[in-house]
Image (cartoon, rainbow, N blue to C red; front, side, top):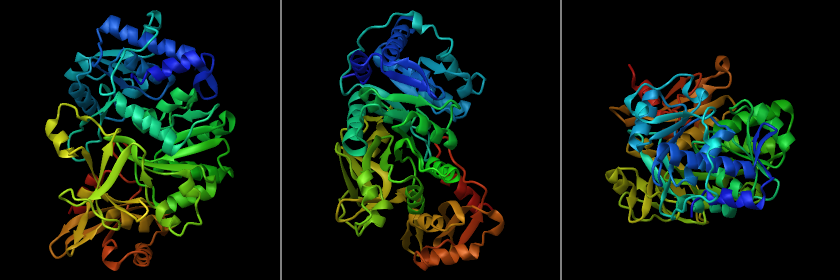
Amino acid sequence: MNIAHWLATTALRSPGAPALLTGEHVDSDYAAFAASSASVGAWLAAEHGVTPGDRVALHLTNSARYLECLYGIWWCGAVAVPVNRKLTPGERAAVIEDAGATVVFIDAKATGGGTDTSEAMNRATHVPVDDAPWREVRGAREPAERSPGDLAWLFYTSGTTGRPKGVMLTHGNLLAMALCQIADVDPIGPGEAVLYAAPLSHGAGLSGLVHVRAGSRHVFPSTGRFDADEVLTLAERVGQMSLFAAPTMVRRLVKAARQRGTDGNGIKTVIYGGGPMYLADIQDAVSVLGQRFVQIYGQGESPMTITTLSRADHRNTEHPRHTARLAGVGTAHSAVRVRVCDREGRPLPPGRIGEIEVMGATVMAGYWRDPEATAAALRDGWLRTGDLGVFDEDGYLTLAGRSKELIVSGGTNIHPREVEEALVSHPGVAEAAVVGVADPEWGELVVAFVVPTDPEHTDTTALDAHCRGLIARFKRPRRYHLVPELPKNAYGKVDKKALHTTATAP
């Protein structure tokens, strides 16, 4: 089944229901949303010869037009290639070329008002969404038929360990992922809304699929970006509003709510993920905004669906291991199996740290045109995530970091995540990241990069004492770098390669 059938069905069931909103203003109801998407699909086929399986890229900022184009691509059976708008022109061109996209939807905000001049981008037809004439083209009533194994979404990884790879996600993958959201993350009722404050090219776009099926309102901030005060105001006025947020966004939302003296009235659920949420941060978030939080752990290769820490888990403060669970990422989603393995792929018992592997209906079909990378990532049907973790006796998973970030000092393994947790629990630390650097005596030393809340009054001696009170002495950082901010890549993840370069510079 084509994932666009959900839009077609909702438009028939509730044609007059509000669908696409900019701020509080309703741009389209579901009948108009479906009609526009059908027109996009018909126009792609008639004017550009796009056929099922062809790739069409989206280089756009968040807007109602984005969703119309996304569903239009699926409507005609093509494959969506969302492009991170923060990528450089060269990086964008590499994605477009690798995907073999023939059409690229663009807007001035995403391109910075300029035009890519690379050969790969020039080979593709650029379509400015505000000028496109697709509304003049009559669309098919029903989306093109697709099978569960047909490609729907080509997601390019952040490429922190090499060139970005195209993750092949099928219609079956997306359907399983969306149904897991209802079963495990956040059941959706009538009259709800979803706010797109994070890029639609990532998890936010995927989290909205099930809201189309439910007939929810899809809300885009008027500013076109994440603004914590705007989110709080929209929540109060729109009501029953959910959003997907990275941990940095949660921290900004909490800060704004504290300053306004509000508890986030109107926010139904904040689904957080996409990076490490440290224990101190989620405890602070719950103290300010209440029990509105659900955590998801996934990867592009198993989108949004490896484990979830449910709302009930957040609320269960009486459980003896509540704090430990809050520092973890929860239990396996309904559609997958999750295990922790040693380097030879042998499952490890609870309490032992190893690589996290996942198998199930949400796991990618492989990497686009890269059989070697596919074979390395998929072993006997299990996706090797590259993440390290440990299960407790009840099946709750805690992350320990990336396998390639493991620090070995004096022959002992040190997991950066544990050191970072200790650092961010200090009230003078806004953010922290830890890397290992080569040392002739110890093999590697722990080096911490800290963003202080008050740079003029941050004492690294006090930070060191704080760490010694929480973690073993050998795990504590041997060097501290106080920095105004942590370097992040285009996907919002801390760029530890850049930090390692800084730490090893003479």
